[in-house]
Image (cartoon, rainbow over all chains, first blue to last red; front, side, top):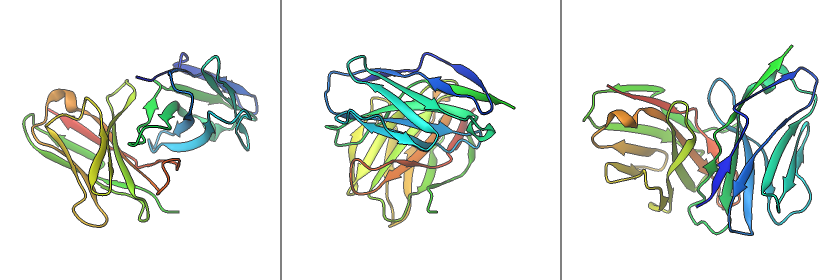
Length: 116
Length: 114
């Protein structure tokens, strides 16, 4: 079974600064998908960014980018120019490409605080 | 922008009672999911549903749980005889035809079992 680990329960960043959230996972598969979801205090999770394991190029979405290290099974999220609205829980998630049910396996989450 | 909705936002029930949590997925989506999050713990997969049948279920999804798509819009999770440990946030999600597509989550239903 796959596992996803987020080793930072809480992180803090100054507004306009850059912060990196860590995620590691364990799998024996070679093809899979990785995601970062944001859960603001309203509690509706929204997708921030995703990465296909077969792509070597790191995904980027505006201020959000990932550092995907397949051999190390690491998938960190970098938030540049942090804004107050970035404050939320961030969840790393894994999905197997072979899984017919599309199940997401989540990490424990990192609470990001943004200081003005 | 279309979104997944869930009702009620908060449900309080007595242990042993049956509850039905309701979800309206995004209208053109074909895959439906339930996840739960016990307070302070990880979000856990319960079940996925496609073409009117369960695609996959976790160990958590035992005989006390069932899912149904009673009409063209609703997707429900029924817990037949609630236990104290069923207290959690329950999230519904849906995704479009491709398995690669993003899962869109609802705001969740907080279930409290007394």
